[in-house]
Structure formats: C-alpha cells, structure tokens
Image (tube, rainbow, N blue to C red; front, side, top):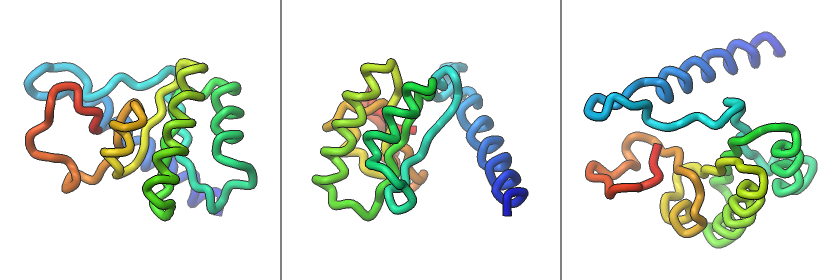
Length: 132
C-alpha cells in the first residue's frame, strides 16, 4: 500500500512539476510561481481528524506555503466561508491558498488561484484572472 501511494505521489508530483514549469508560449514565463518550499497540501475534510483551519495553521507553522481547498461536497456558501478564513490565515504566514473548481468563490475570497479541469476554464481570460 505504501509503495503504491509513493508511486502515485511521484507520478502526480512529476505531472504537477511539468505543468508548473512549462513556459507559456507567448510570454516565455512559467504559468505560475510555485511557493517556496514547493509543498502543496490538498484538503479532504472526510479524512481529517481536526478542523481544516487547524490543519492549515499547523501546516503553515511547519513551513507549508501552499494550501488548496478541495471540498466538492460542501455547500457553496460553506465552502466560500471556509476559503475566506483560509485565505486570511494564509496571508498571516505568507502562504498561497487556492481552491478546486469554484472560480466564483476564489474571486470572492481573494484566493491565490483556482485549480480547474481544462473544460472549466473560459477560452478568453480576463487580465489577472486567477486560473491554473
């Protein structure tokens, strides 16, 4: 089981690195700046033993600078409130907080970005739109 998790993590890590460090064809710059250290914590409240705010704070205190809220089963208002709280907490530590799929919540909360499937990304992006 541990070996399978390690292999999956390695594959996922490689895919993330390839995407993040691929340069945009027009600007020649990476699609996004990766926080330092490049450690990403992705939430899952169904597996968490403590509230996500406490987990995020502990991760930030430990040096993590990138937290992504991935709670697709929460109501939109609940997810938006949680994202706002995480963004405020993240700012205290100089961390980037992102969310999955919910572009409107990302914009409303002032989060650092949105992780979306390619089909969810508008073809024409407005300047400064936090998509990735």
